[in-house]
Length: 172
Length: 178
Image 1 (cartoon, each protein chain N blue to C red):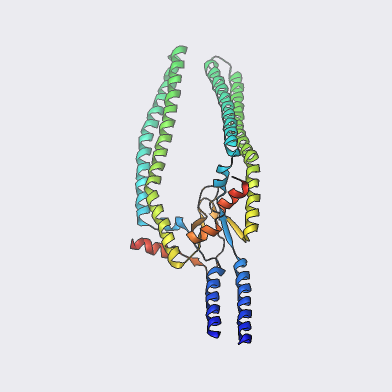
Image 2: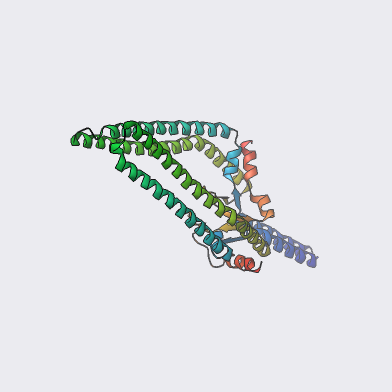
């Protein structure tokens, strides 16, 4: 009987221990990403792409600027009709240029998302692996560049899993 | 023997109680309010109304832009044949128009934002009170949002077993009857 109740006690203790508190860890995916060599090379690639697009756009902008200046110099000897036509043309060209600029920007952003997505997926999968191995119930995000801190304070005994995730990512 | 048994039982009860109070100390639930909002039957009409409102505002701004552009064209055509003072006055006029256009654009954006708050506000407070009801029923200490309004994740991971019990998104939908 005594043995039984001791056993029961132990069982209860354990089951309550397990149930008693939610086990929370935390990390910061942006910090993890920033420390991965793949991300560095992606940022390099995106930077290069942006520069390339920029220099192409700069050539177009210069050409447009030149056309505008030429028109300014010549318009006093042009007829009203010619002037209106030329102005319309310049407005159109300027609009095309703006569209081109927007398109370039979108392309670069799209490329960045495409390149980063698989790495982000890997980071989240690794967070899950680490959390499971530690028996965590929840992993919270510490914060983000855009929105600031989500967690203002965590005591030393709380589980910051950033290093563990980075280690695991390096192994794979 | 019987006495021992009762001590054991007493201990068990204490454990049960302490175990219980401990469990009640911190129960953290979480919810995805955006998913709930998107599922609300009113949402379709709200989105349509918001789109109509934004389209109307954008048309108003476009008309003002055309007016301004026309005024600039008129000025361009006559500026070489009018006096310096008249020219200065015209330019001042155009400057004012341009400022008014910027102000109108800013105000239109604000109006759209206000309209969004006005139409979504009631739905959001319905969701808020359903979250409160579910949280009370389940004895939760906290209910966290899973993402920010920018879409960044606040909860990076929840174990399946934990989510099964503490992700209250579905329960809130049930509470709302959707």
